[in-house]
Every structure is written in structure tokens, then in C-alpha cells.
Length: 136
Image 1 (cartoon, one colour):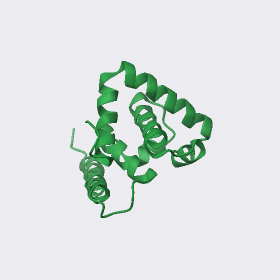
Image 2 (cartoon, one colour):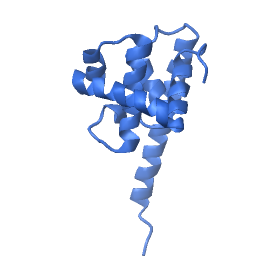
Image 3 (cartoon, helix red, strand yellow):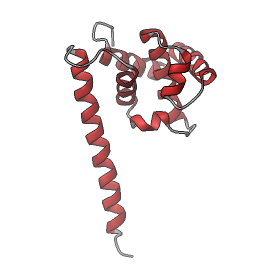
Image 4 (cartoon, one colour):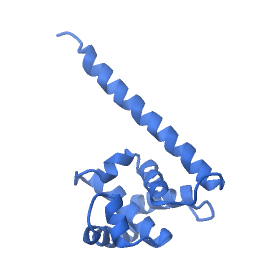
């Protein structure tokens, strides 16, 4: 059985694009942290959450409901509401969902912060990316 070079090339290209996006997110977050970029926005929170949970930023907005996809959304919604003071409709819009989904995500994040050490640590890491004065 031969090697499918096209499949290998697609996988390598996808991984390369993911690494490039992660590098861009890190540069943008560094600018926000140093005060060189714009103030902390929902987009910056989205990037920080994606980095902390090791997912693609577009994946947070996607329709999937797997655990690996929804937990970063919970963290994003919690940070946006509790650290930025964003409204539920704005949070929902940022994730391509409605305000009731945003409210549910925030409540789930509160529960996971208290019960899941891995989630709490990743949430703290995302928070530290944006607000370095906080404990990571």
C-alpha cells in the first residue's frame, strides 16, 4: 500500500497554518499587554482563550458541541463577562450564538472553575495573558 502524499501534505499544511495563527495571536496579545495595541477587546479575549485551551480561534465560534470545543467557549464567556463587563448579547454575537447561550456558558464556567482544576488553570492562564497582574 502506497503513501498518500496529498493527505500528508494537507495535514502538514493544516498544522503549519495553525502554528502561524498561534504566532499571530501571541504577537497581538503581547502588544495588548505592553499597551502598544488597542485595549483589551473581545477579540483579544478570544485569542487568549484559544491559546490557553490550545484550540483554533475560529473553532470557538463554530457549531461543534464536543467537550474540547465547548469548554473554551465557557472560559471565553466567563472572561468577557467578568473581566470586560461585556453584555450577554455581545458575548453571544462574538460566538455566533444568542444571549441565553452566553448566560448558560457563564454559569457552566463558574461550575467548572470550582470543580475542574484543569479548566481553572487554563482559565487563569488566559486571564494572565490579558491582565498580567492577575495570578496564573
